[in-house]
Length: 523
Image 1 (cartoon, rainbow, N blue to C red):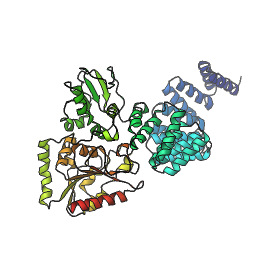
Image 2 (image 1 turned 180 degrees about the horizontal axis):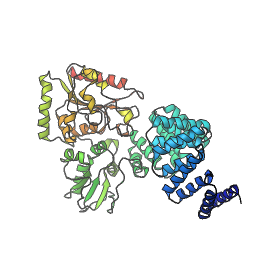
Image 3 (image 1 turned 135 degrees about the vertical axis):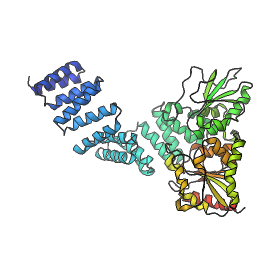
Image 4 (image 1 turned 120 degrees about the vertical axis):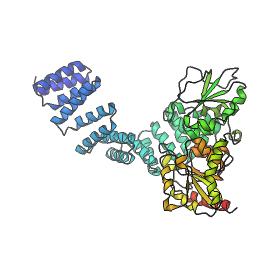
């Protein structure tokens, strides 16, 4: 049996699952002809399948050293690098393969997925677009391209891609869910609900579609179905905080009868600040047993005054408890409707000592002419999935600084706070950001301000919880809690909303906010 015949036999054994026999035959072939690259490549695949990854890497690299133009070996190497958790290297290898043979839509799609995971959206979009161009009949390529276009806010083009994927595969639940999210982003809500419903009918346990449906229902004020669907968040797998695992049962709202209740934090700072309003209500229900609330360390100082609540910092041993519940499941437990939102403020308070200390810093503004002291925040966390749509930068606030009788104060924290040291155009700005240590400091500063103007971030919730007047710049496709077509917030009586009138443009919202601030400053 010559080498070609032996190789054909070995491939047949490999396909039949007789890996050991195939491996021995490949080894014999390689011993007879060390330059026979296909046998070396396939030995690498067998080692990879058996989990012998280092040996597999060495064999695949040896195969490529023998035949550097082998697209098959480059693709096999990329697959192994993905398995080893080396996406950067895998993307580089797939690029080599695509350059050697440009008409590989499957390779370009895999490259796009890697680049998407590496947060290189422009390159990912290019790869998906090329894959969809090469194989316009593959629904997955159209769906993946649509997802990248949606992330780039090219919503109409994204919707066309999702509709294309659905036309090619009417059972594509993911494309229906993505289409629903895109319709929601465009402000077309009822078609979005229909798309989510179609996705969940195709796949009843499609957590992502249920989750997105619940967020849209909350946005529309359908709290009954919204809170119910909100529980799908734990199966969605995309939350910034995972579901906790406890041996103690989840509380179902039944009388506690002496049992101790643990409520634990989830998601972001703003979410916790918004929903801790329910803890004093729970304390009234439980009677003499205080509620245990496990919360993030940065929030501890500002939550200390919650009545009937014992705080437990994350990571510390928890006090004994009998039942538990996540904080954002409380609205459903209280059967919260729009008209029954517990909106009394303040439910958080600044520490008097800190208020006095920061008041001394703010007193200088009064010496310089008084007027309105306005705290500003122009950016949220850059890791937030929607940050590009909500953060605006410091430059637009220059117009507010020019209003007579207005003094701006930076209370921005995070990566962009350095902008306050050198405001665009040099507009006057009291920069308190470097000296703010935690939320308690921010709360104390707010107590000495006349107004807070901010983007949709945790500061908005802190100001609202303190009962401080706060104006919030809200994106065209808002987070569910800001609802639609209203300038007020049912959650915070002292809040006013300034909404984008069209996607990606803050001009109109800033214009309206500037006019409102001029009127307020004029008395």
